[in-house]
Length: 340
Image (cartoon, rainbow, N blue to C red):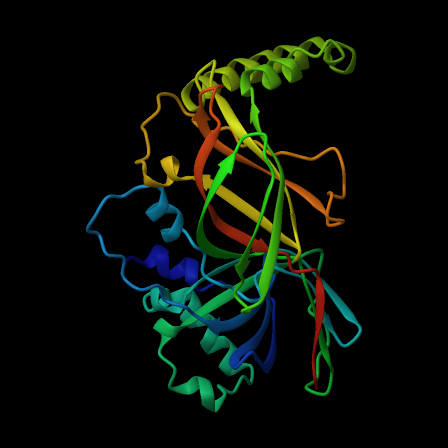
């Protein structure tokens, strides 16, 4: 600690606005603290913080374990796009979040709370004795604002939430047979039975597809010589990445499927899930591939979607032990009104 650090924390705010509104939803409480204006305008929301259970370090650190360890914590208001304080529109251009546990020596956060109290903020009763290790602060950056809006407790607050898919790990074992279709079902997080139909399972010649895309003669018509030179560098890096991830002569697995609910399915091979990460040379070691079906609707009348298993397989592969490892539940943009 030094006085330079202290000086950075003690920045004079041009304006401060106390909101102090608690939202109760899904048996949880969230608190809209207020706004500040200095170099930029920020809006602050205090949320519950879901601490992950300590990870058991014993055992093999394979891809399955890594994927499960990287499940994200939930930030309810981090993905908002708009706030309305009465008729005043606040456009969110980004944000950050972090546990208040790490703010115990963050004098900037402590100063913010003290400034809010000085400006009239009263800590709600339910929040007073809540340990900071169980809370997180979401800071939303508000675009193009030179003056904080007028606000009174009688004004309604309207919040627009962006689409934010939620991930649910399933780990359902399934055997895939190249060239064959199959149907199966699983129980989702709501306890509902979900029907899935795999229409096609194909081998994808990754090298052939990449070479065709990067060698398209129409590229020379669309780009300048300088851009084409940059494209050559991209082509070189793509081939280097392919060599590391899928050696020439090997294939990936493409899956086209339908689902009775609007879920995006993610399949992995058993081989991948039980293997350990490999150390590759160079800065690029992974090339994300997506499979977009030619048709919008499958044979069962449901939206047709695609998934690629990015594990190298020989071109004579016929059977792949795999898992429906997880699914994403799509959540549409929605509006929440906080009553006055």
